[in-house]
Length: 108
Image (tube, rainbow, N blue to C red; front, side, top):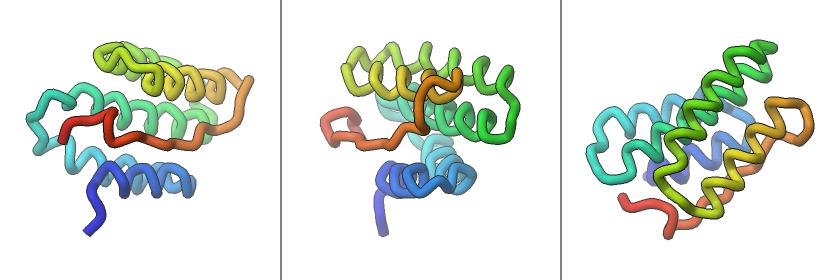
């Protein structure tokens, strides 16, 4: 079976945001490691982009702000770039981001 983060990434990149959210949230609910807040941020980014696609821009911006706050804990270039790409999409100045996570980003 594919690890949850890999499943999330594949579903997200395929545009199946609902399924991507569900896979990662199920894992996150049980996970108690040091990257819990990071996983929550990835879930929030997924929700923010979904809300944007549904035309719920105000909700997307609110959820994105929470995701950005949670991503600050990682202090990595990848986390910052991911958040900036999602923000550009939600604000209408960029395309939907494609996710490429490195194993070094997380501690499972």
